[in-house]
Amino acid sequence: MATVTEAHETTAASNRMRIIDAALACVTRSGTRKLTIDDIASQAGVSRATIYRTFDGGRDAILSAAVETEVARFFSTMAAAMGRAHDLSELTVTMLTVSATYLSNHQTLTFLRSHEPETVFTHLTFGRIDATLEAATSFAAPFFVQWLEPEEASRAAELVVRIVVSHLTDPDPAFDLQDVAAVTAFVDTFVVAALVAPMAPRSRRIQKKQEKGRSS
Amino acid sequence: MASEPEQREIILQATYACIARWGVKRTSLEDAAREAGVSRATLYRYFGSREQLMNAVVAWEYRRFFERLIDDVRDAGSLAEVMELGLQSARKAITEHEVLQMVLQTEPALLEPTFSAIGSTTRDRVAQFLLPYVLEATLAPGRDPEAVADYLARMFLSYMGAPGRWDLTESDQVKSLVEYELLGGILAS
Image 1 (cartoon, chains in turn blue, purple):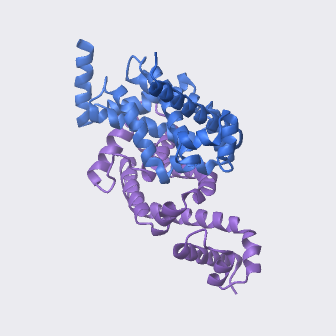
Image 2 (cartoon, rainbow over the protein chains, first blue to last red):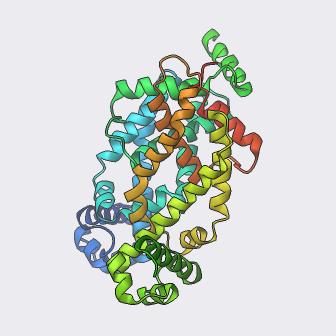
């Protein structure tokens, strides 16, 4: 039987998720500018007091928790797909196509991009792009380690993140990042070839590792 | 009396000076008109609204930024060299750009409308600028020059805006970034 403390913790955790999901639903419908605690409370079906008890930072604390949750959901989808890749090319193609598909179908992001682009903009350009790059690179790098030395894996991950961000902020109608065949052709010529280019001193180590990988 | 393009230029310069002093939010049309030595009516005739004026100033400084950049890479003899010189000089220009840094610190969202509006135009311009260098380079088989120029333009703008793990003030690092990471899959080995 659960103790009182455990039961209380479970309620707190479920309140937290409930409030975050309600905030996301509100933002998807009408953005962040006029979002109030009352909107979130009535969407979540909880009292204002419960909200303040769960998030002592109020509206802004809920919004940053919502961003964190959505990033975690995004990374977990990415991880499931990237974990299935069989080689460097497939990994890179998966990272590009799955993220492009996920992000373009993300309703909250879609609403924000068309109605309050500056909210998204600061995360993808000068303002806070460094933090975004770093977070995405740290997430993706471990997947590349299977085929590249750790330092190269980080560089590879960062390069691929840059391609995603570039197409997200400035889409090319002639090159659909969700199109697996087109992206594979692009990755095999521009990206993978650069990561394993025989002329690079660091890439000789990569080749060695690939040979090692093949023989084992 | 100044011609129309001259007067436009005077107003843009004056507005830029006000922004450098007070920031975007605290620069009013009256400030800009006074600084330019024109009447509010004249300023309205050229720019219509405060928003249009601000967008025009950002676009104006953006154009000047790229003009200076093109000037800095004029002596580049190859695709690798133009990318290296360009990245180094662009990064330096951004770090030392006091007005840009101030706006980024205090009111970054104000840049969004203009940047979004001119984003793909900028990429096109950089790609067009790089294309002759791409055409002169010996590409690996199957690399389409226009696609190469577009990809390099995207990456140029990406590293220019955020160098990430690279120190673009170090010429060795810039060289390694350009030759291996960016051109490694593009040039014939």
